[in-house]
Length: 101
Image (cartoon, rainbow, N blue to C red; front, side, top):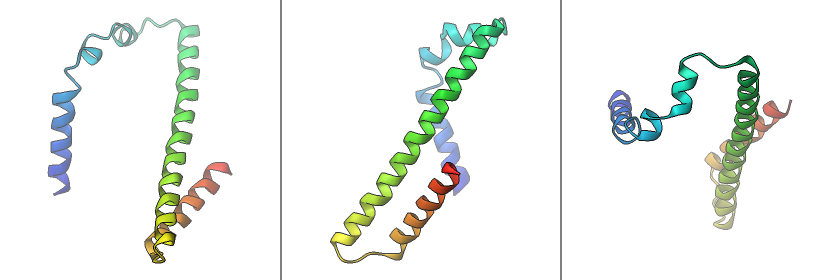
C-alpha cells in the first residue's frame, strides 16, 4: 500500500510541478548547472542556503510544537487528556532539548 501511495505522490509531483516553467525554464538553475559559478558567488550562495535552512527548521519546529500544544489544550478543555497527547508532548520536549543542546 505504501508503494502505491508513493507512486501516486510521485505522479502528482511530475504532473503538477516538474513541467512548470519555473522548473523547466529557470535561467538561474540552468546557469548553476553549467558549473561556471565563481567561488565568491558559490560561498555567498552556500551561506544564504545555510541561513535559510536553519530558519526553515526553526519554523517547522515551532509549527510542530504549536500543533502539539493546541491538541493538549483541546484535550484538557474536554477533560479527556489522552495518552497520545502526552506522548507527543514528551516527544516535542525531547526534540527541543536535542536541538538546543
